[in-house]
Every structure is written in structure tokens, then in C-alpha cells.
Length: 376
Image 1: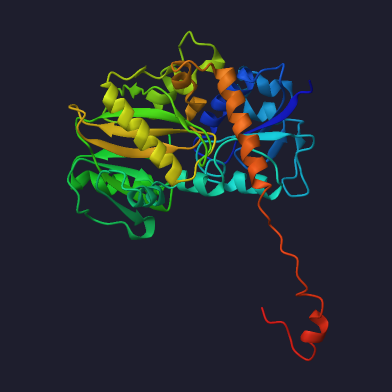
Image 2: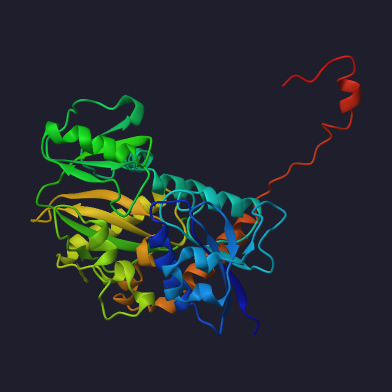
């Protein structure tokens, strides 16, 4: 049986560049070597595409990124296909220029199967403002919020403190601040505006707990949900350090750190009926954005579990939320098998769509335009 050639594409021009490397290493180390030939395709912080070699599979190599890419082959990213002998791509990005639909669009142009959500779902999953508008249309409950552009920042907001101020397009809590008074608002808005031109301000659901769940499948087909988790923040907000640095001294192997090493309760200590309701809401959110492959959906739940708000969806979650699926009985290598199979199934379905239309519109173009000029 021949192996599938999988290109794991990762890194990118994003504040979450290092997080993407960690997730990509986890994927590359857990892809079944009996089934797949793995080709690392690393995108540097300046946007260069690098065809990786075996050094790119070793976590310690990334301690010096300049040395890692020295002497490597740069790729042209433009069609015709720049990724030779690739059966399926596995995009692993967190943040801008990768998680947001940009790389997915390039792969669509090359008619190459790829794991995860498509262009639109990835874009909506990245933009917290547009995402919330879609969720509202699907009647998903949310906290009160407002959005602003950084060239028109407000001096006050019609919301009840405390508030969360976030870049609309971002993740890993980078640029996110919790503010308790109007005096703190100005600085928080300026911090968020460093990371995006759009800023969202939300009311804090005080004393609520964060509960997350993962969804697996392609919209339009059967969807599955994992067990729920409850992350345990060290402060008011689940920080970048909580998510990724708390495991720096962990006994976990390098390929299983990252989000997997953060403090969390799995399964979450919630009532079974609450978990079932969260699973239903997560599937609704997933379908509303037309997601594919895998995502993690984050919720806020009151202490009495009577009130549930959807927070956001992550179309490429840190660590691919493999720890939630392992707790659900699905080991990481098998989870990757399923994500790749879903990618191939979605691509096969896309081939049923007609993208051209035969016609004679240009047959008499010279005669039709004789004596006239084409106007731009």
C-alpha cells in the first residue's frame, strides 16, 4: 500500500508563530509513518516558504530559527503547483496569514486537498466581530459587545465593567486585556490596536467558568463532539503563559506539550445535561460557519449552569485539541487519520461542482468590438 504524501504547512507572519510551530511538531510526530510521507513546509516570520528536511522534525532545531532555515530551498508559492508530489496539505497556523483563510485560498487555487476549514469558515473563525454576527443570526447566546476601528477609538463604551478588550483578529490572548474602569480602557484599546485594525470590547461574564469542546467532521455530514474541558487560569484571564508556557518544565515529551500541558480539568466537572447542551450549541456554531475537519468551540457557563454564552470558535485549535479526543477514546494518530480523510472527502465533493461554463461569448469578440474601445 502506497503512502500518502502529506505537506504540513506551518509558521507564518503572525504573533502566534511559535505556537504554530509547536502544534505542527505535534502533528508531524504523531502522523503514522506507515501511512504517510511527511514533508515539512515552514513559512518564516518574513513570509519565506521553506521546503524542510529531517531537521524540521526535531523540536530542538527551532531554538535558532536563522540556523534552521540556512541553506534550505525556498519555494515559489504561485501556481502552477509549487508543492510537488503532495497528496494532501495540512495547514497548521495560529493567527494572521494562515488561520484566516489566506493559505486556504492559495490551496484552493491549486486544487489541492487540505485539512481543516475552507476559506470562508477560516476567515469568519478568525474575525471575532464577523463571527459574532453569524452566531447572532443563528440565535446563539453571547455577552454584550461593541466593535471599533483603531483610527476611531472611543473614550467610553456603553457596557458594564469589567470588560475584555481584544484584537478582532488574533488568538492566544495576545493583545487581550481585562479592564475594570474607564481609566484603564484607553491603554487597553491602544494595546489591542497594535495587533489589529479592528477591536472588540465585551462585557465580562463574572464568575462564569470557561468550558470548551471540540467538533470533528465536515459541515453537511455527520458531526462528532469530544468531552468538555475546563481550563484553569492563573489570573482573571487565561494568559499566553497559561496556555503554552506552563508546560515548559513538564515531563511531557516535546511533541505533546503546548496547549496539552496547560492546566485544565478533563472532563469538565459539569452536569451531563449541560455537556449535552454545549455539544448541541457547538455543532450549531460549527455549521453556521460551514466549518470542516476539526475545531474547538469555547463557552462561558455560569456557576449554576443555567446560563451559557458562546465565546468563540477556533478552526485550528492549539494542539488540535487532541487531549480532548484522547479523553473521548480517540488517540492522536487516529484523530489525524480522520482529519486527513475528512480533507480528502471534502475535496472529492468539491470536484462535483462545475467551475467553468462553455459558451461562445468570445467567438466574435473582434467583430463585436470593431470601432470601439474596451473600457477598464
